Length: 202
Image (tube, rainbow, N blue to C red; front, side, top):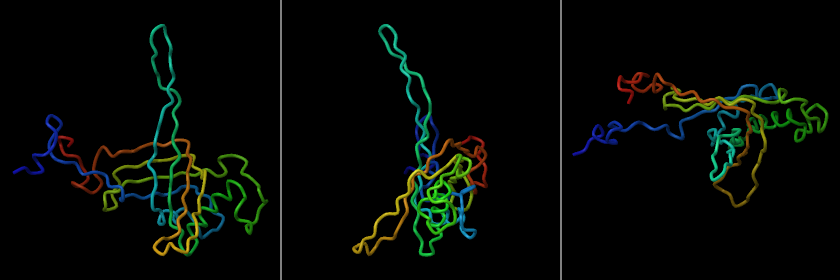
């Protein structure tokens, strides 16, 4: 009878590696704009429902010659991240989103002090950082994505619906960023196996 130690792919190693699970993650924010002192990026961290991981693509450059075409990599593009948060009854998550949007341009917080329709002069006035962490289920971090130069490209506050008795309000956002770096722990599995790779690297 087969056991886990006998399962695998011939020539590639035996056993099954634990996957990173989609529901074990958290996102934290650095430098997120806040117009109210009691509101911060933590209010988005605890209300987060879904968040894309960064996606990278390269433009292709065609090189034409006599009877053939070759291709080389051109400029790279980081795709915008889609994020969904629950709109809590305290309004803290919505206030965190509003604070960032108002720093980009004064539009939806008409009761806040400042010039109406006044826009930020430079990106450094409103851009923030995001850290996306894949967790092992016991607060151990097995992977990090560090996103720099973030700003909210769009915010969708959803719709009201008398017939939606089983649904809660969410806010969906597209977050554009300039660059991302991926940190994969080469020394361990978070808290699994005492946090260290075995000698075979499997």
